[in-house]
Length: 103
Image 1 (cartoon, rainbow, N blue to C red):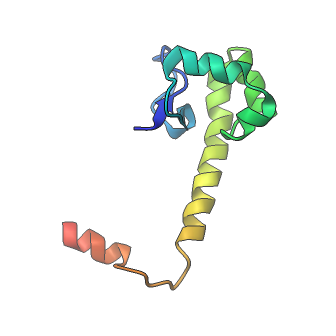
Image 2 (tube, rainbow, N blue to C red; image 1 turned 120 degrees about the vertical axis):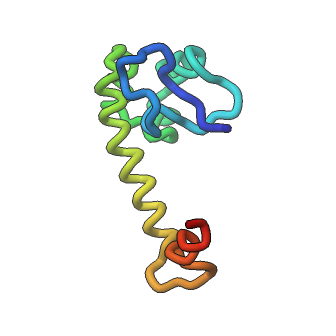
Image 3 (cartoon, rainbow, N blue to C red; image 1 turned 180 degrees about the vertical axis):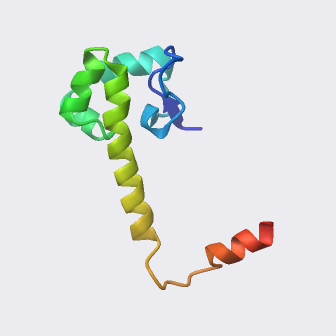
C-alpha cells in the first residue's frame, strides 16, 4: 500500500488512524518522520500538514500533531467524498444495492 505510517514507535498514541498516514512510495517509519520534520512548510502542506501542525511534529508533540491532522484529514476526505457523490447522480449501482448484494 502507498499509505505509510508517519509515527511508528509510540504505541500509546492513536497511530492506526488516517491522521498518521501519507501517500508515499518509498520512505516509511523513522525515515519518513525525519523527512517530514525537515520538510519545508510548502512541502508539508501538500501532505495536509499545516504550519501549526508541523510545529507539533517538529517539537515531538505527536499527540497534538495527530489530533490536529485528524481534523484536517477528516475534513478533506469528507469534502472529497461529498464532491464525488453528487446528489442524484446515477453512474452505477446505488450504495444500498451494493450492500444488499453483499448481505
